[in-house]
Amino acid sequence: MSQNTVIVGLDEAGRGALAGPVVAGACVLIETLQSMPLIQDSKQLTSEQREEAYEWAIQHCTWGVGTADAAYIDEHGILAATEKAMQEALAIVEASLTPTYLLIDGRDKFWFNYPHSSVIRGDESEPCISAASILAKVTRDRLMIAYAEDHPYGFDEHKGYGTDEHFAALEEYGHSPLHRKTFLRKHFDAVSASK
Image (cartoon, rainbow, N blue to C red; front, side):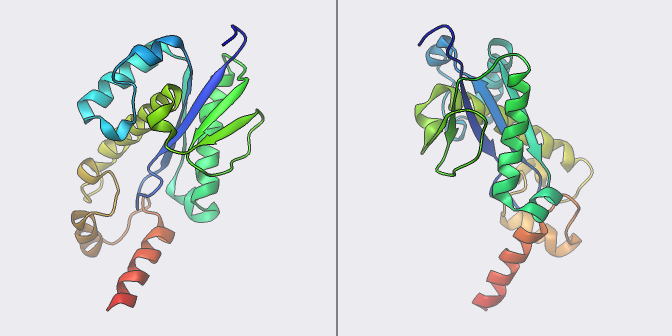
């Protein structure tokens, strides 16, 4: 890799949740990412390990995070919202460095100003995507824990995903502005159809 090569990994967290934003992380590939044992797929780490890896990444890497909230997801769809969050995360990196190539986790074909590849399970195989996944996941988890202080849904436990506890709270309290109404509609329509 030449000194002029700037590879940026991108990944998201919260895409399948019923509430809260989708959050994207961007992280520039540096050599030490490969030797840091906690830089791996965020789903394989405990919350404590993710926090440790996050703190290491923000101190050693050039990085950014971006978000798209529930209202944006409902209006534009989850794919467009994911792309918006990724573009925001990338813009923060661009303030310091000009990328030469992007590696994006997954199979979706997003639009970027730079040459890029979609890498299926890239969070398992590409350290810069692994770091991006950790940045996105920890940022989103922290947001959901903060939301739990003012909303009675258990966001600090399930982070907005469709658990039994979450559905019970929705039955009791109805939805909040943090909920993705299009996602809730799909779920409850599916439940009704199965009865």
